[in-house]
Length: 239
Image (tube, rainbow, N blue to C red; front, side, top):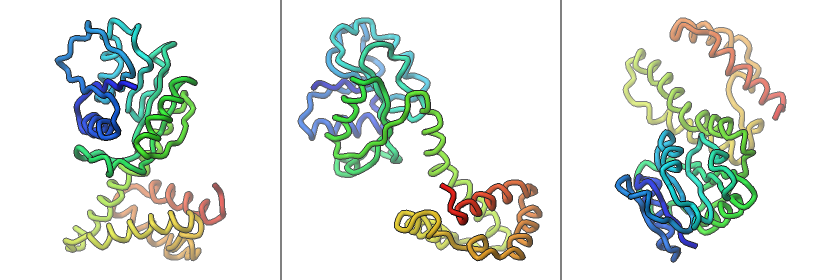
């Protein structure tokens, strides 16, 4: 199984090194590649989202291509057409080029047509990873879930930091540790059993008074209400 990785960024180089270690025949293609040349085997595009479709459109000869895929979390693979196609998105932050043992065990979101999905499963298995299968027309929702779980946490920590700045407290390390502990509790016990705080205790007075504090500080009580409503749904056992 020959793999042609187009896009020598952090993800592309990490996968290139790992597939080499797994004894695949693998080629890393950069932006200077002449797309008039024949490419054979599997194409895996690891470039930025906005470049993926144009890269595919630049490939003139697809007669020797077994399948084509990409690693975007946002795009599905339906635009590839009838050729076996897939996408495989890592639920993991590639902040640098990673060694193969650092990729092991991560979960990939995969989708595609029937033959493409089978290839995506084999690639993830070769990386010693796990996967979840996404309906092809639901890829944007899948990506939104990842953004909420990862990127939105930055915004929440920033909000806490803003409050600490106002209080003259410089160090927020223990708040980050608190977040990590809470996430570990969710992993171990599930959302409902891990829930703590005023909603879990049904401390109405604290909730109402903190809503006023939230509004005074951030100028938007609706965000506070939104999160409190979700916490009550968790407490009441809604999935």
